Length: 213
Image (cartoon, rainbow, N blue to C red; front, side, top):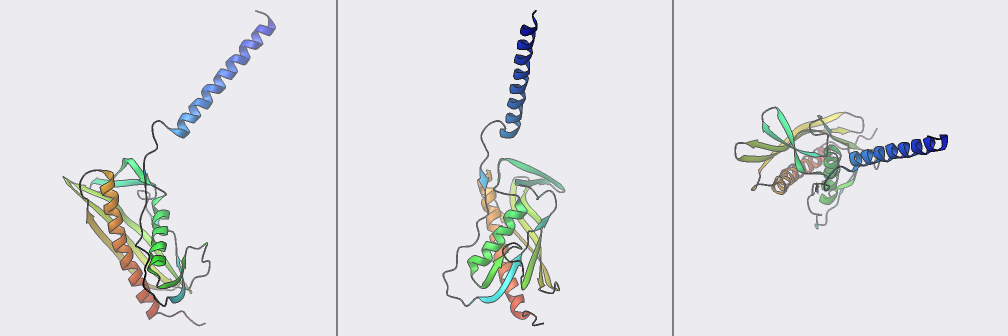
């Protein structure tokens, strides 16, 4: 074998290994099969009533959660203390981020608060709403399936003084089999809790005016 032939074979081998490596990386990045459907949380409809909004700035921070819910995967609990995830679809974003945006949009669509946003859009707020997700999953017990949504909410004033704390918990039956029905039930439960949260927050802000000094 000549020196030229040896280096030609070596170049072909290196090129082959490089292509195999790239193919392997591509399969890891893209995965096999189709991308699963993405699901979102739909806030309440935009209010058509003419209201004089409360002229305050409300900051809705990104919710906290344990690792079981800090994911874009949709979870279910087949038995107490155990969580699994649907393979047929997932949320459009990490659940805490998605739920934080969902809460903000419920306040905005309600129309009774002057300014609502996160820490980026409203860096200096008159009030701050902090939440901690405790449940956001489908509970399976035998043939029964129930959507559970539960979170604690804490309202603070501009001095970082706690005004009040409340736990919101809602459940909805899942209509029939399939992930679509499960997500719809989670949406209904989340909207019910969000409406209660908006009313509760407004009542507290009216009862606890912004400090003047």
